[in-house]
Image 1 (cartoon, rainbow, N blue to C red):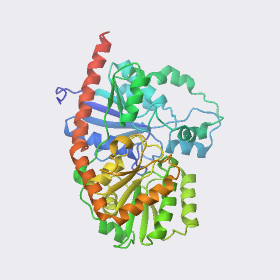
Image 2 (cartoon, helix red, strand yellow):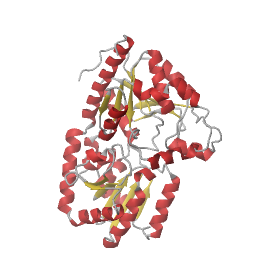
Image 3 (cartoon, rainbow, N blue to C red):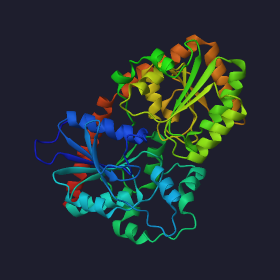
Image 4 (tube, one colour):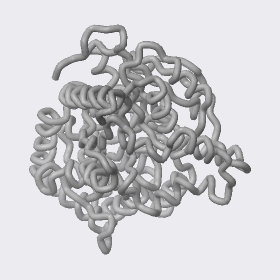
Length: 430
């Protein structure tokens, strides 16, 4: 890897749909950790985003400046609750002030879009007008999103007239991926689909990373004390936003069966509630199964919180039961803590986890996925040696392949390719 020449144009502009510390997820982790490593490389990252779920126009998260701009959803007839739902997940927003800021930002080396649609169109157009390169990261799946999840994303705008289509057309929103100087896919399956659907070869699979040094050391006993969990309890942990995509309801159902055999077991669910109605269904299931004392539902923890790291070390098993998962960065974090993982055989998890070596799979389309998951929990509870071997294999994988230093080095190489392509495009060669 070679770093860019020492010039004033070292600014990397990261543009996600939203970015707030109290509603944290995998995309936020990727952007923040990437920015940290970029500062170490002598670059100057900034995060420019909407005001979605935020109160402050400007702040700093993990040492990286964050600037937010007023936004709106260009649909007639949206209620306040529908706008709030779109802020939480999937809203196709427009922000004139953000677009102007992208056009005026000084010292830009490269724009990095972390969303498509109108927001991606703003990045595309600003980059084209200024003669700058732009790359796009596909975090949430574009080519392999299940129809059921697409229906959930579009529910708030169903039946609403979209007056913002002309904005998307002017911004070239449909051409964001086609015109990008590079497309980065966090899942191998997504990258394969992108190569089949796009008419260029500027596509790379680049997995998410993890701060191995941070997550490999934690105080699990303290987390158990703080949450009043017995030291001898068998703890099953899931960290992900509370959302139908993440499928925690299936985990609660499986845990109910497992708990009948292992009464000392505890289930801990940690994550922001991006779908309050779904969270209500989970709480109802907990009550119906009489699991009130056996399940903890905790709000999302800050990425900077030691409690987040300690939670992994407090667990005996980590479970990610998603219906759809582009990557699964929480699996890496669990591996750093040496924990055995049970994951759904979907999306990026199919290539991330090696079944029987670094984790166990559950097929969400199996005849009885809840029963399979319950049996996997029973297997790991009964076999401490298997838990240890799976956890140690995962730990080695996280340290050797997925540390952020390695991933960000590979990203810089892709940036260099994007800069070169943009130069050829300006010269009429691309």
